[in-house]
Image (cartoon, rainbow, N blue to C red):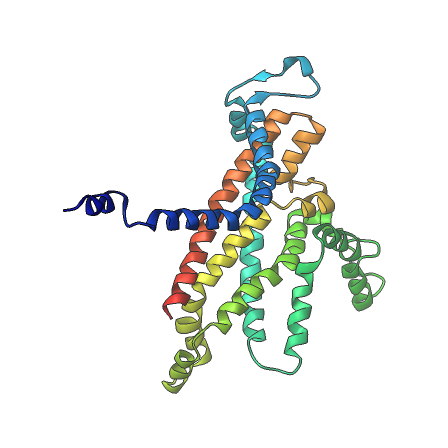
Length: 315
């Protein structure tokens, strides 16, 4: 074996390493313009989170500036044992479950109707999506004043028109505060669920439905054994994504009930702890707990999305 062959085996063919270097340089040249945006994104998102994480381990109350210091996991212990914070966690769970389940069931029916061909279907679909495009605070104000208000709200106005002057005039927010918030959130988030379920319905293979009809299956049997199993992934995706959004909701609770009457969820309690009690350490700990819950839900959502893409790729 010649010296050239030995050198080739050790360092590779002549010209291979320069080509690899040129390839690496080309890759860096393509990625370099993205570095400023990446650095900016890291500064905007990660540094505040790191600061929040550090503060969550501190005893920091603005009313007692001379008592700031490291307190370990006491703030997290307080979050999980404090009666008000535990109540807000329970309220958050109940609010999220109620909104997500009602939205899925209600707009599954609407999606089934909108999947059919009829005159003006495009206009109806656009109108159904409109609530999702409304600013959350504006939507909450709409429900609080234009619909729920006992003096001039639409609901009591309808009662007056139907039943006359002696019609009942209930105070909807006082009598049913939890369901007042749930109804407003369902109205706003159901179009989001409908879009997901409608996409699932339109991806349903038509030959399977047609074969079921040829075999004598009725509408209910077709829905139960073909459509519903096909929509399972889309239902899971809608529930998970909806949970991510609703579990962080602050606008509806703050605007409609101001956290009163047992409707204070965890985001609102964090707001109270931070801006009213000025307890930065405990508020940061509660925020970290909320973030962990959101990450857990988002992890399941990403798995569902990945499985959906895998199924579409196999077709």
